[in-house]
Amino acid sequence: MRRISLALTTAALIGTTAALAAPAAQAAPATTATAVSAKACHADNAMIYSDGTRLRSKAGTSGAVLGQLYFGDPIRILRSSGGWDYVQLKSKSKGGLSKGTRGWVSHKNIIPPFCGM
Image (cartoon, rainbow, N blue to C red):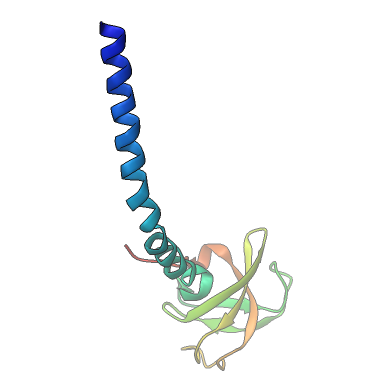
């Protein structure tokens, strides 16, 4: 008797699970929309962490100094190599470098992108 009851309960649960699965499938586009908005955040909204950060022509301290960046200067991280990031200025820097200037910055001097909650 218990086996029959267990079998009926299992069948009822499976039916309920299938019924619950259908609305979840309909909710998938909303999840996709959330993923798209999170994807737009990536490395585009990083900024400089410390004043006097050197923007260099090459990764490493041997690269020529192109100029200095200051706390809050907005940057776009284009690629990384070791402890260095190749960046592009999103606006004129506080140190006078023009928007679009590219160079290498030590990763420790960058506030990574924050995508919010």
